[in-house]
Amino acid sequence: MKRAKSILGRMLSVLMALVLTFVMSFVMPQNAEAASSPKGYVTVSMEKFTLGLGYIIEPVRVPIYEGDTGAKVITRLIDENLGKGSYEYTGSIGNQSGVVGQTFYLASVRDKDKRDAKIPKYILDVCDEPYGRDRDEWLGEFDYTFMSGWMYAVNNWFPNYGSGSYKLKDGDVMRWQYTVWGYGADLGSTFMSDDGGTDALIDAANKDDLTTAVAKINSSDMKEHILQDKNVKSAYNKAYRVLQDMESKQSEVNATLATLNKALDNAKKPKILSLNKIVDQEYTGKEIKPSVTVKDGNKTLKLGTDYKVSYSDNKNVGSATVTVTGIGNYEGYIGKAKFKIVRKKEFSVYSISDKSYTGKEIKPTVTVKDGSKTLKLGTDYTVSYSNNKNIGSAIATVTGKNSYKGFSKKVTFKIEPRKVKNVKATSTTSSVKLTWDKVSEATGYRIYRYNSKTKSYDYISKVAKNSTTYYTNSKRSSATSYTYKVRAYKTVSGKIYYGNFSDSKKITTKPLTPSIKLSTGSKKIKVSWNKISGSTGYEVYRATSKSGKYSKIKTVTKGSTLSYTNIKLSKGKTYYYKVKAYKTVDGKKVYSSYSSVKYAKAK
Image (tube, rainbow, N blue to C red; front, side, top):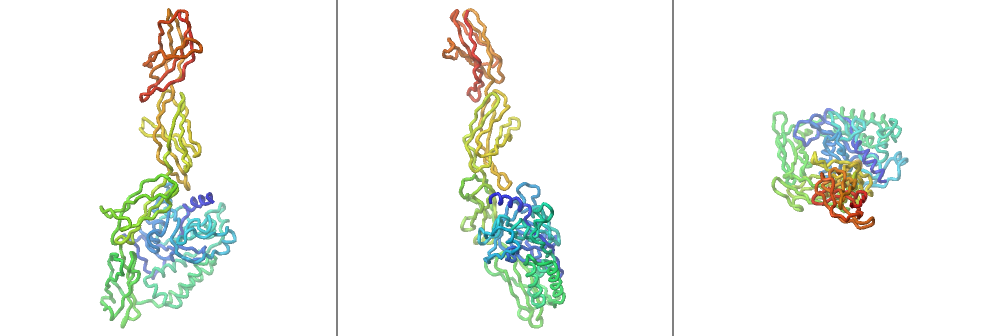
């Protein structure tokens, strides 16, 4: 199962969204939160037809702005329709094409639908027995089967890259669909097939135009009036049934669209009253009812005589609607206008530093400010955490309270492997061996060596198993100091998370072993040796018998001095000598091995 989940994480990170195209002339576009002028309009829906449960977000027409990607639009739409904090994702919402680990992946969406799933038979015939949702009010990856998750299509095509990299164009149709089995094969996708399509479980009809027609009605300010026509209402309801049926034939889709368009063409068009533009209203926690000016041409109408006013969605932060209905001489007239209810106050959330794995949930303190004012946890905001136990990317969600109600922000932080401890080193004349304590949660370790030229540590090697807690750095120069650091790493869904560096460990390789020779004189013996590169000096040892104990008789403190004469010896007595080189590093001596023993008889 773990392997299957890892596969889904990788594959869905480049699949995740669905898009189709809709345009109809008589409908006014849905209001958007961006302040700049729209660059066009697209149709968007969020569907769970493979569960037999209809829509999470019904088809709507929304504006797009400069730089909008599929990820930006769907997250903006979820915020507007389901509320802040109603989706979970990994990667970046912005365009991060080419940035490893930053592809937008919609992991789950809040869905409070309590109905039992009615998965179509063509899916049940091939998939393992579905096991249901992990969380009651969410729908996301790995619910039902290990191949379940959210995918997106644009204009009846499943892009082979994340929606954060897809720049939407005017007229695009983007449908986000939930796949139960086959990484989209149950949606009719052939993305995962090797031969261009053999793995699709169904030949799904192209429902772009029908989705467009429904979206335009849903997004119209005149929706209520439009659906008062019996023929339009009947065709509209039939369109929903056909759209939500995964096994609808193309002929049925086309016929339903034709019926709906005909009903719309024949419907009686409303007489429109004009309303003044309503400025943004500040959130108060109560219903907001701004006054309006209503005109018939240049004539200003009277409230209570010519029209009545009603309001909807006019309490919480978001888009509200005022509806004017004609009365008296203006019976049959209608007019609508939208206005925004904006947050009274906003706040900023400071970034959270990376944390080390502990095996328990990590809940770091979050700093939240309104300008220079530091806000209070529990009074001004609450904090919730997700994905905050295991190594990877964790999320802290800050949700405003009281004056900050209706506003929320997410901040991510990394959970990394623990710091490598107890690094030790030993050396020979040409190698350094490092050892350290095991980091159980790590995948492996990376070794770094200090570069005195760049004054930084260079990566030199990787140990790919966490159970291997040693590394030998060979082909080193003798009598040379090296400094090392080690850090653990963990690979999660193709992304590498690094722990903190260990404390540095300095080690000096042994000097080469000197070779000695002896020459004798009257009551003296001269000990000579070859120069050892990098050595600080030499120590001379002597014994008076072959198996006797050696004592140090001379320390030569200059590396350039290559001999020592042992005087005042007993004539005719044999003496045994050996020498070792040393290098002084940080006040301590690093020794070579002893030379071979040489002996001579004093004259």
